[in-house]
Every structure is written in structure tokens, then in C-alpha cells.
Image (cartoon, rainbow, N blue to C red):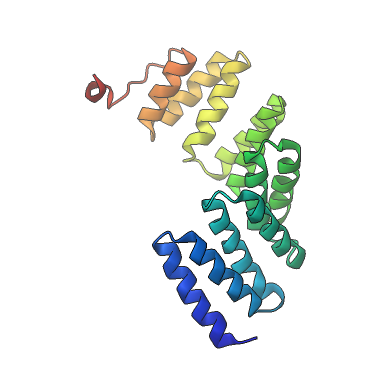
Length: 200
């Protein structure tokens, strides 16, 4: 184990990531992890997982995240990242467990509530999804896709008034997305797309 080696490998890994050379970055993050012990291995393993994901090697990324969670089971970011990867392959029940653990260790992680909502929607559990999206917006009031998904969900559930209210709230900070949502749902929220004239 060498502190100097770990520092050197970290520098190479960081530069490789800046230039999007993810294979090189993953290799040097793994080397960094090998030069460290205990919880100090968690960060390089987690970043190596991110590199693997960028390379489309999601199963390898999952394995690295699981390894980091064996070392530090309360690492909320790793639970979220693992849930996100599992969600991408439609493993929604398992993804939910990961998001729930991320929330247990970091209740205010808005992206974990949002990820949880997407899996609940996929599992046809709309009321739970609605609660998760409401919590997302509560934690991150400027979450455009939180509003988008919640308004879409209200529309599917037949609550046009709630949908319109959300479209109008979204329009205050994301007018283009609000206009798109109005078109997709067909609700009459009275919002305009500021860029519509440029698409004609």
C-alpha cells in the first residue's frame, strides 16, 4: 500500500475523466482502490463504477457499487447509483429497494425520491409514485422533471385541475417544458412556448 501511488493514480484518473477517457480512468481508479484500505476504498470504487457506466458496462458498474456497499453499507450515493443502473434494465422491484436504502441514509436526496417514483410508475403504483414525486418537489422546488412527471401522472389519473396547476407552476421557470407538457396532455393551462416561433 502506498499513499504516493494512490495520489499519483488519482491524478491520472481525474485527468482521464476530464478528457472522457473512461477506460483509462476506470483502470486508475481501480489501482487507487487497491492502494487503499477500509472505507478509503469506497470513493475510487464508486467513481470507477461511474466510468464503467459511461462505457456501457453497467453490470460491471453494479458489481463495483456492490463491493463499495459491502465496505460502507450506509453510503447513500452508492445505493442511488446502484438503483439507477438496475432501473435502466427494468429491475424496478430491486431498484426500489436501493432507492429506499438511499433515502434511509439520506432522506433529503431528492433524486432518490425521483428515481423511486419512476420505478413506482413502471410498477403501476400511481398513488405511491405521486407521493414520491411530491416529496421530490418539496425537496427540490425547481425540479423540472419532478413537475413534469407529477403533472403527467395527475393527467393519467384524470385530475385535470391538478395537472393544469402544475403546468402553470412549471411554466414560471421552465416555459418550454411546460408548453410541451400542455401539448402532450391536451390540458388548457394557457401557457405559451417562448421558442415556438423559431420552430416554424
